Structures are given as structure tokens and as C-alpha cells.
Image (cartoon, rainbow, N blue to C red; front, top):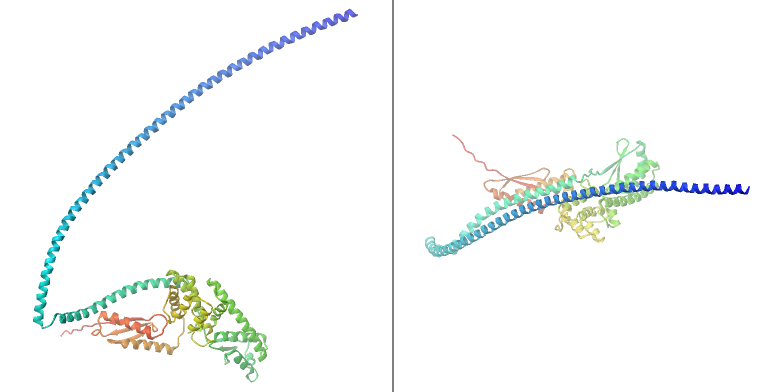
Length: 522
């Protein structure tokens, strides 16, 4: 048993040893195969690397060759351009040198000509000096002979000649004056027309003439009796309290409120309308409604003045002056509302000042305040110019504003572009057709005065004021007045009209001179 186990163990050991040997042999053979494969791959990779390296060297050589070729081409191009520039520069240098030589030659030629001219001038001067001495000697001889011949001394003859020359010069001066005046007038008219056109086209204001009567529509005619009241107590209370006249006639369902004071008339109209709505028309109620409406109007004119100042872009105006601006709505001149006129003047003045290079906002301010005195003419005695200037001084307004207040009525000279713009704008707003109503008597008086001024001049045969007194046509005697004197006559008539009359806008003076020649064939 033991031997069997021993034998089995030996056999097992032999078999295990043989297995190890066989396994090792197999592993070694496989390792040889892998080694051969790896060596083959390594050789293949090495061969490919050698090929790639060879290709890279060839590509680098090609690029080097190409770069060298391009460099040589660029170098040749640059050298050719340099040669062309060099040739061009050399040509310019030669041209400049030739021009310098030509100019030097010209300068030398001019110098030679100058020397020749100087010599000739010296000879001519000497000759003229000789002639001058001869002339002076001849002149002395001539004067002596003239004195002997005429029996007049040289001083007497000189005075006579001067008088004759002065007489001739007057006609020449009149002609020159007429020519210059026409040229300047045309130029100024074109420029003024352009500025006025700019002002009027850039401002479109509404206009409605103020009336002296307000009409109140009644629901029925029975209210007329209630407004009159028992024994006229109500209508008397209304008229005495509000300072107006109430006109009650046969017109159905209407009464009229009349007053020259627009502010009082507006308050009275509103008071009566509220009384009609309320239905209680009696003295106590009339006074109560009147006080309420008066307070509302005071607040309204202040608010309206503030809104106007804000819209115009004018700042720094005292609240009391702002209230007066609002109150201008209830003032009128020749039917033109004072506030509408003021706003027109402010806009026009701003545009005109801007066109002339002045201060636009200062011109607007002066235009807005140029008639501020009219707001106080019913409360304070005196003319609106002095009242307005006092108000502006009291509230420390700009001197240009005060100058504009005086200058637009010719009480001061115009002192600035802004002041001139206000004066022009005031005339433009007031004098345009339909802007104002005018009393017939004043109009006839002014037209007659214009004609009388023209007829008072020497040589005038007829004078006619036309175009609503804005033009006067003067017909002169052609035998007494020549063309040059006609221009002077027109100027004199215009100046006298300016100095003696007050009128809106401009008055054009036309002097007409006609000379007729008649021949009779027999």
C-alpha cells in the first residue's frame, strides 16, 4: 500500500514536472512569436518614419525654394519701382532747376526793365517840372491879362467862379443823393421785407376786434322785468355797483351790457349770467354774486398771466407784473385787444431780434412789457408809457425794457437791437390792415394834415392822400422843380410828416413830375 502510494506520488511528481516543462516550452515559443511580431512592427514604423522624414525634407526644400523665388520676385519689383521713383525724382529736380533758372532770368529782366523805367520816369519828372514852371509863368501872365481885360481882381474872379461851381454842385449833389437814397432804400427794403416776412410767417395769431357792448341771451322776455326790478331797483343796483350801462330794448330775449372798460363789462356780464341761472335777482344777491365773480376774475387774470409768461419762456417777472399782463386781456386800443397785440409784438420782436443777431429772449421780454402801463390806465392818471416805465423801474426790469417802452412812442432814441425789434414789431402789429378801428374824425384830420404839408412846399401843384392815409401823391410844376429837386422835396415832406403827425405804420411820399411838349401842325 505504501509502495503504491509512493509510486503514485513519484508518478505525480514526474507528470507535474513534465507539465511545467511543456508549459514553459509553449510560453517560450509564444514569446518568440510576439517578439518577432514586435520587431517586424518596429521595423515597419521605422520605415514609415523614414519615409515621412524624407517627404518632410522634400516639402521643406520646396517651400524654401518657393519662398526664395517669391523673395527674388518682390526684390526685383521693389528695385524696379525704386528705379522708376528715382527717375521721376530726377525729372522733377531737373524741372525745378529749369524753373528756378527761368525765374531768375525773369527777375533779372524785370530789374533791368525797372532800371530803364526809373531812368525814363526821372527824365519825365524833370520834363514835367519844366512844364510846370512854364505853366505857372503862363498862368501869372494870363491872370494879369484877365485882370487888365475884365477889370476884376483875381480874388473877385475866384469868388464868382466858386459861386458858379457851388450852383452846379447843388444839382450834382441832389442827383447823387437821389441815386444813393434809391440804392440804400432798395437794399434796406429788401432786408426789412425779409425780416418782416420771417416774423409774420413764423407767427399766426388770431385777431378779433373788441366791441363796446356785450349781448346776453335770456331764456325768455319775462326776465327783462325781473332784471329791471320794482321801480328799477335791480337795474340801478347793477349799474351803480359795476359801473356799466344795461341796455334793454325791444330785441327779443336779449339785453346788452355797455362800457368802455372791458374788465368791468366782463365782470358785469358774468354776474348777470349767474343771476339769471340762480333766479334770485335782488340787490343783496347782486352784491354777493358780484363779489364772488370779482374774486374769480382776479384769480383768473393771475393764472392767465402766469400761463402766458410760461408759454413765452420769460422768467424772473414779479408776480404783480404777471397779474398786470393777464389784465391786459381786458384792455383795448382802437378795437385791438391789448393782450393779443402784446403777444404779437413779443413774438415778432423775438423773431426780428434773432434775425438781426440780438438777444431773442430779452426782445420777447421787452415786447411782453412794452404796453404794460395800459393795464393801469383806468386806475392811475397819466399816459400808459410813463405808467409802464414806472412799473418796470419799481420791479427792477432791464434798462432795454424801459427803453423799449419809451422808444415805441418816440419818447427816447432806440438804444439796442432788441429795442428796435420791439418798435418794428409794435408798428407791424398795430398798422397792419384791419388791426385797429380808427375814429373817422381823427382819420380825416390826419389825411388833411398830410395834404396840407405837401401843398405848403414850393412848386407843388396838387397833393392827394390815398390808401387810407398811408401814401401821399404830390404833383409838382415841371417848370419850377427838376428831377433832382423832386427827390429832395420827397425827403423834406417825409421828414415834416414824421415830426408833426402821429400815425400807425409808414406814409409813402410819391413826387410826380411831368413835362409836356405840345406842337400844332397847321
